[in-house]
Length: 301
Image 1: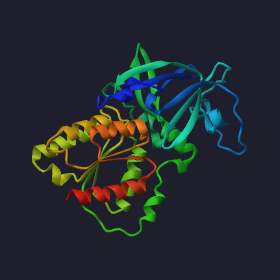
Image 2: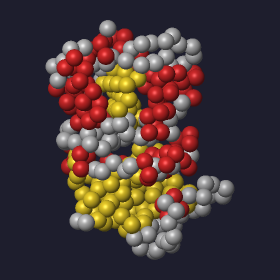
Image 3: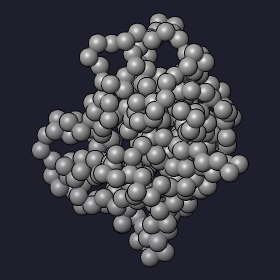
Image 4: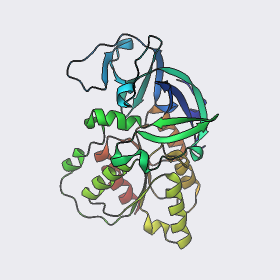
């Protein structure tokens, strides 16, 4: 799917595809979408997860299809006019069965409302943000969490940390921007296990930027932050905007910055490179993230 937003750098904007399931409006970042297809015959797979509808093979590529009615615990049945949203993130091609596709909205991350804790009890919620448009609420779904809940091995490969072997303790402070509480915890735990015991975590790019500015005002930002890790999709300020601000700042620009996101595909990688990111990794590769941090911090000293 071609969109102009992919050609722009650091605007803190995104395009959201609005779709419906059981008459409710939901959203997905257009950057995750490969294509949208009319519903077609799906082959059921025996003994698969209850939310897996089955598989199909457009153009010789096998796609797993997830039934969003079951994932969202809605009471409805799909219709012959339904659609399939084919996505690519975390190096996976996944189809999501939806009712209808309503259109694309261009919005700022600053205008996305962050759901409170009542919608994310025990990390079970799948809403990452809410858009209010024309007196209608559009809920942005956490598709990475939906897939990871169905197939945990598709999430962070935390077992890769064990393969790194024994490591010495490092006091090098790392500043991280990640909006998912679950992923934030997993990444922090993995970094601690890998020896990085001083992790400053932030819920979004805006919080991370404010913290960097606080350290800068104190005159010791280069001592208090040795490496920055940022997701791309975050409310208030996304990772690309954070990268742009960091690399345009004369004091902060030499701090190594790693984009660690499910959206690191060819187009987004080109965008990150143009913004000056020192490294970019897809989210499952936590072991590679640690090795890259090792190299970046060592070379910066």
